[in-house]
Image 1 (tube, rainbow, N blue to C red):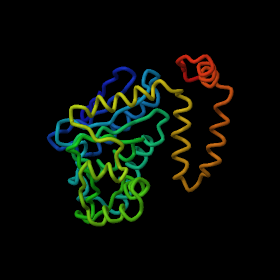
Image 2: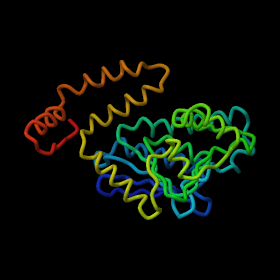
Image 3: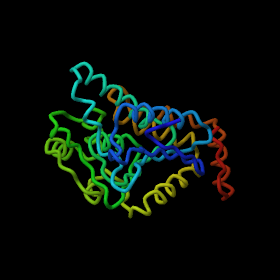
Image 4: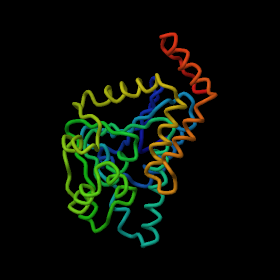
Amino acid sequence: MYETIKTELSGSIFTITINRPDKLNALNQQVMQELALAIDEVYTNKDIKSGIITGAGAKAFVAGADISEFLTLSNEQGAGLAKRGQVIFQRIEDSPKPIVAAVNGFALGGGCELAMACHFRLASDNAKFGQPEVNLGIIPGYGGTQRLTQLVGRGKALELIMTGDVIPASEALSLGLVNHVTTAEELIPKTRAILEKIHTKAPLAIAKVVKCVNASFDKDLNGYETEIQQFGACFGTKDLQEGAEAFIKKRAANFTGQ
């Protein structure tokens, strides 16, 4: 079905691997189209409870966009490219099921933007992050100026984007850009362990958490009001009933997402 990505469903976790290792998994339009289809599958397949996005090979998560595609674009075509990329990455950010980036090497340019669109990030100790677009006479276009600012703050985001500096996983951890740094061998097992823990929680509540946290960055929404609405929407669900009964009876809850 796919030519530039690989997918695998194991234990309710859907792993999407960008599979162009000879190109350091650079994002071209075919990758973006296939990634969009894979994200649609996360939304629609009831057997999928969460997703991981990672890169093929030992060198790169995604080392950027395929720059050869940029050379002939007009202003309007460039804007259209950014718009399409932002729509796809917004789908990742808005997913009601957690999607986590397992960054296994270079995450540069569009690769860093892809990682930041995920709900959170784990990195191997050889990972490197950066938005070096200014070196090419352009700027991040897939949401990088916004999400990097949200994650590391205005001053550091401006410094990183304006210098084009590439930072190691250890610095990304200290900045809050990634949640955990592991060895390369432990990256996927650690990511899966966190998702498996999330799987034991109420799926409806997890989806509402995503909606509320994202609302805090949406200028058109009042995050506190969103929280009130989503909190109220939990009442009357079978999951709340199950969670409350399990708590009272001191047993493990068995949530069904209803």
